Image (cartoon, rainbow over all chains, first blue to last red):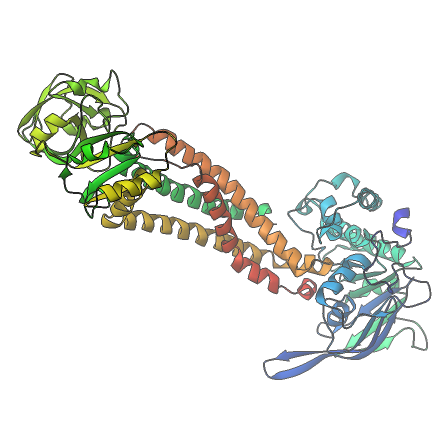
Length: 260
Length: 365
């Protein structure tokens, strides 16, 4: 499992020169300044995420909790640079990326972000190893021997060494989710964003996945954000944020005492 | 991703096979007919044909003076010039019924413009006064006459002296005779003919000689073999049902294929929206999604092309030597492959439009 605790170190030089290709301990890997998001439903404009300011620090597991419709997925997708905010600024590795083009944001995600989706979301047409490598090759790039070696080490560390050539549908949901984690880690991201990673898992599989994510969050150069409404996740949080009606209503960092 | 869905892939491949085979088969038969239409001209051994004034193809030609041949003898660049007779006639079958035939009367002793491939023996049988040849493939239409059998054409007796093999033409069955017998059958007098065939000496500029002949014979139509062959094909294509029939079949083949490809590719994108959204979230740009869809379309195109060409080859092999003419010019398979890939691309346009609209954020819903 040592590979899971290695410092993030991107092979590919970032096109955004000022963005750190490695997270710097103590400084936020991601900062949101007054971000808000409106959705238009016909003629009615609805603010689903109220103005939010938030730092995601490396070496921390930040858990974002709240009921359905509270705005946590909207906040996660804005953090993930897949949804543009209606207002506010997004700062990644010290650089304001709010005005970046769609293509630059895609390149940024590919090089510096890792995503763990609900139900793994592996590509059924690809085997497990190719699923892990798909992110690195998605822009037509060649997969280097080092990246392939890294993928093999990750899969081995996550107990999937014997399933490299298996299709996702041949794996259990827990195994699929671990393959999804390997995919998220193969590019050594500075930020790992997890969307309800345990929602489809049984207790034991969920525990294995959470243990893995917790270990990953100990890396002082990587931030981990996990969105959930599953209370079993809360004890794993270094920082717990609770959302209601599009706003963060509770933050263990600013609360007088930490707790769930 | 499409290739993972075997049934969907099979559907798309089927669409391509439909395009490749149906369109290829239609075009092969059409080009086979084209070859047949101008077979008498293409295989005449001549470089230039002379027809009656204002005629641009053999179907509309009248007759012209045979003495034009003597005038042509004055041109230094001409190797030979021979009059021939083309005319419709009625052959009396053993059953008593009549069969339309096309009489081709070639001048002895050279027999230029005569049969170009014999099933056995030599075309010299036409040197005999009443000798005639018919093609093996047409024997059934003529009541299966045996070699040596005497039959009547326009009430005149001819003797089947040999069989040709593939010396056929578009339209009525061709009966080769010598020009003396042809005149007897058709009533065309000795000082007239329907066409004059001209062979040029090697290395001579055909356009220059054609211009000289036009100047020499201002009351005749002078065409190179390729010009006349083209005119005959265009005439038959536009004045018979061939053009509309083959055009319609080809268009239907293309439409069927494009619709199948479009539906399968589009359905696949609809079924795989989440996968595309995940890829976008992982860092795929719109152009990368475009490349994925295009790669899928071209892969399906290549598989369909291989199967379609295999079936087409089987079809061509099956009809070889039969009455159904089929011919694929060398340029047609690559052109057909290009058309197929283009249609695969067109078939994937709708899927592309849908896939490019998929937002990466939808991977989180």
